[in-house]
Length: 428
Image (cartoon, rainbow, N blue to C red; front, side, top):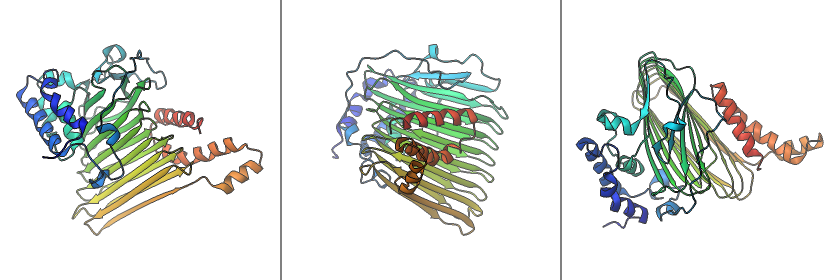
C-alpha cells in the first residue's frame, strides 16, 4: 500500500470525527460526496514533483504538518478598499459582524455555503464530485464554508463586491477549506474583489476552491489579492465555465504566503466568449509562488489572453505554467499568452513553461516568456540625471509592473492594487 504523507494520514484519520461538524453532515447526498472526495484523496495524496503540473512546486514543508502557537489577534476592518457590499469569513467561518449584506440589489443573492447546504441545496455541488485533482478532492471532503454569489438574468451590480478571507491564529486545525460558488445568469454583470489576508504571522493552510459559471452574455471582473501570512501555505483553485458571448476577467496579485499556488482552469464553451487571465506576483526572502493556468477553447470563434509579471527578490522563486488548449474544429480562435519576470537578486529564480496544444488549423495563437535583471544602462542614465540608485530602481520596477496592472478595468481596484505594489517596493 502507498505510504501517505503525515498530513494526508492526519486528514484521513480524523475525517469521521470532523464529518459530524461539517455543513450538510445530516444530508446523505453531501455526505456521500464528501466520502467520495476523501476516497480520491486517499489514493492520490498531496501532489508531488512526479506530477507534471507540480514538478516545480514541492509541498514537503506542508505535508510534514504545520504547528501554530501564536495567539489569535482581533480582526480589524480594513479601510483600504471601499465597498458597500462586504462578505467576511474568519478562520473559515462567516463573520456577520464584519460583513455588510443589508443593501443587496434585487436579483442578487450572497450567502454562505454552510447556510445553503443547511437548506438542502445539494444542486450547488452536483457537478463538483471529487475528481482527479487531489487538492480539489481534499477540499470536497473537508469544505467548511465559503460564499455563494448568484445573479439573476440581466442583473448588473455596479459597485464592487468585496469578499474578505481573514485568518487569525489559534484555529484548532490551522486549515481553511473554503468552497465558493459564483453563478451569473444571462446578461448579468458584476465585479468581485477577494482579499486573502491574515492578522499576525501564524502558520496555516489555506485551500480555497471557487467554481464560476457564466451564462450567455454574462460579464465578471474577478480580482484577487493574496497577502497571507509569510508562514502560511496557500493553494487556490478557480474553475470557470464561459458560455456564448460571456466575458471572464481575472487578475491575481500575490505577495504573501511562504508557498502559494494560483491555479485557474477556464473552459470556453461558447462562441463570442472572451477569457482574460492576468496577474502579478511580488516575492522576497524565500517565498515561492506558482501560477498555473489552463484555458480550453472547446468551440469556434472565441478568444483568450494572458499576461503575468513577477518581481523576485532575495532567494524567492516564481513559477509560471500556462497552457492554451484548442480542441478539434474550434476554428477562428485567438489565444495569446505572455509571462515576464524581473530578478532583483542573483539568488532569485523563475521557471516558465508556456504551452500551446492546438488541434484546429484556423487559429491565431502566440506565447512568450522572458526573465532578466534591471537594465543597467537605464539605471546609469537615471543616476547621471541626479536620481538616486534606490529611487531609480523603484521607478524601473514600477514601469515594469504598470502595463499589467493597467489590465485591471475597474479603476478603484486598479488604484488599490497599484498602491499595494508601491508599498511592497519600499522594501526593495
